[in-house]
Image 1 (cartoon, helix red, strand yellow):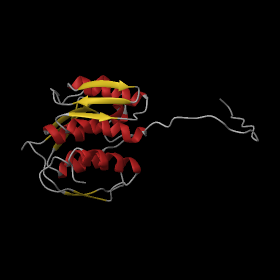
Image 2 (tube, helix red, strand yellow):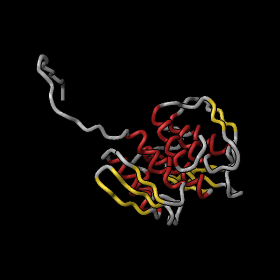
Image 3 (cartoon, one colour):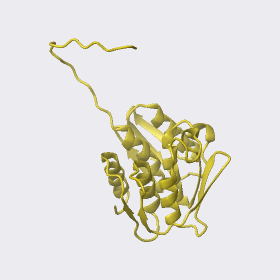
Image 4 (cartoon, helix red, strand yellow):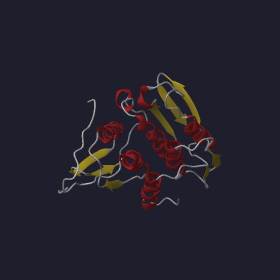
Amino acid sequence: MDKLVVRGRKRLTGEVTISGAKNAAVPIIPAAILVDGVCRIENIPQISDVTAILKILEQLGASIRSINRHTVEIDSRHIHTTRTSYELSRKLRASYYLIGALLGRFGRAEVAMPGGCNFGGVRPIDQHVKGFSALGAGVTTEGGYINAIVESGRLTGANIYLDVVSVGATMNIMMAAVLAQGDTVIENCAKEPHIVDLANFLNSMGADI
């Protein structure tokens, strides 16, 4: 397409349904891993990233039930692995949110590098790693996977200063920290509306953000 031609001076009529924000849905869905029970998420946008992240949760062992086109129930009680499918994970950048959620609940996570890119490449996650390390996790990369593990079994709250304002790192650290022992303070954090959406979701499950 070379150009768009808009001919004005015509009355606009009709209705449009506004779905929920992708940038809120994509981290909120993995955050359901953090609760040992059932979460219902409504007003989910019908996009490929949402479909992919739901498939990854099913592969981990979660039960997904579609209530309607925009509502799902996620039952995370029977998750049996913390290693995601490489083929599924590499399809979307937001696969890295699974690290924070799995690490927070199970103390370990093995997730393919976001979008299949090289670690620290086009979409660097160095601030995510900095946060996980401060909370007590060891993070390595091998065979296209990011491996995070807490040797003690549980993360510990920490003061974390982000060198650059990062939406992804802020949300990932939030998810990892909600089940950590003690308080976590994230300085120089991002403050976009979808971060507030994630915080509200975590608080509704019992977190204190």
